[in-house]
Image (tube, rainbow, N blue to C red):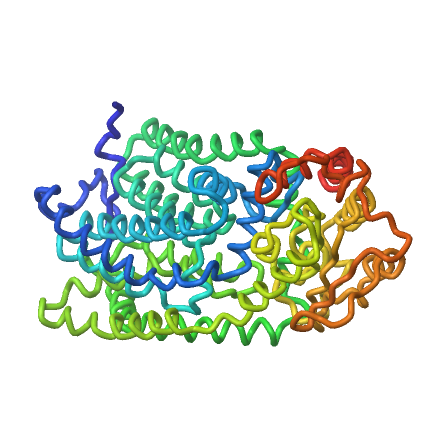
Length: 556
């Protein structure tokens, strides 16, 4: 086992230059570890489980969970990411969903909800480890307990979902912990894990580089270059491996270069500003007990007892990640919590024990408020998706493919029907998924090359049912010439609606069968339900031809 030289460990930079290397300041005395964690981890596990209990109440909390569930089914059926199913995100979380479905079945998300609890527990434990190493045992307990209390301090849809930000956070805290201990290769791997879960997870590279740069004053140049090389290798090699495991061009397009219209503020300024204000207010309420200590830490930042500058760099880079794209969805704000917890811990450690308990009380009360919200919150959009899934299931056979034109991909999962397109929501084809309120929503704001691929898919394997779930939103078919023409030529609406959603079936004279002569091109005799249906759909000849068109149309 290779041991990093002590000179590469985290040091607080000296306030004045010195002609000779300055030794690292003394750490808190090393204490027995096993007993400490044996007492603390059960407490953190209980707190995390209690705060995550609302996540187990509904089948799912957000459309993101539905999107990931449908992706996982397609991948399990032999599909390929950035090919037969696409998204703007890196592949780590879809692969995790696929693995969970393979082990525990794809009819519920309980396995992923349990993994989300484990991710939050890991984040709390790592924060405790960072604080304990820097400021002692009591600081470790404070940071570990604070994190579960504030981790649910937003809309439950944002905090209770088993989605991207929840799984980013263990990687980000692990990266800072490893960097603080001079384990640069492991720090690079942790940054890569965050980046491959969601692009904004790469923001943690800033504090890691700051910690590495601080070692340059006390580290010989060859050792510093070696540390930088290990950090770079740990970061770059996993990213390259993932690109090769998918397709380099598809990975680059969908995860990096293809979202220009998504990452813009133009046309939705007021809409986005109000969302930012609402979520910032919720976060401030959740962190009511943390903000005064953070302000105190800011006043102490130049003193010997103040937190390291790397925590401020971490908070700044996480804030930039929240700002990126100008969407301000609530789950984006979760990245702010780890640095905020450590900054608050740095100030709270100066308080006497009796005053520390009273300082934590506002966070506990806010946690109780958000926990109650999570338990009692109505889920009208989920109820709508369930009613729509019931209607889809009643009007189609298990082997039929359907097109749900909306922003609720969970309908496919709830109805147990295969999607007729690799584009699981209208967002990728209209830019609505960016939370826009109208001006920059439409065909011309779609990701490049998507509409020709959609037309090829629907022509090769016409869906047995088209569901217009726009319900007056800016992506309604009457605002989209291509989809409007397709529906007018080949489909007719059924009488009535399902909560405002319009269902279309093939018009008289349209062939009900796909290219192979069986429903939706699925070979006769195929087993019905779940991944088995999707496997026959994914491997159908018409689908394969559409896939080739997507690669040539978007890979450049």
